[in-house]
Length: 161
Image (tube, rainbow, N blue to C red):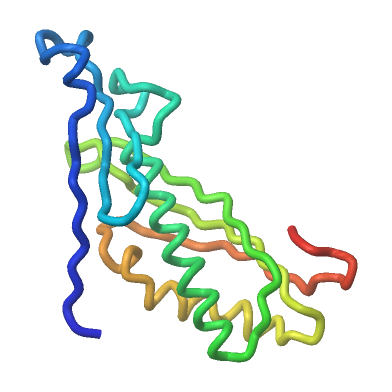
């Protein structure tokens, strides 16, 4: 793959409620716009005076890491002939003060994967490492992104996790 570019337009939509006269009073709401896609409404984390009903940048970062791993995993499984029936992840990101800055210090992906009966479960488990290694988003952050995957064979009567 050559070079790729991703664009977005970010608008501080909270400005309609007034200017930044004090730290407590201004709205943190924003709108992210992507060509050809629905806009996304967000805010700061409630700890930073944000709206708890809206997505915050930290939510979006852990979701991006999880989604990238999942999409990479599904691709490597398809290439390897592993039939994934379902996949869900309960990702946890940890933010703490490190080196004088508040930052992500760790993200743990905890995917639960169900395979079609007859699938090679050991290969499917090993493919998480390959997915991790090729995930663009994981390769772009400066903190550990770990994964603790559970992989099982689905029973014929089980449609999802």
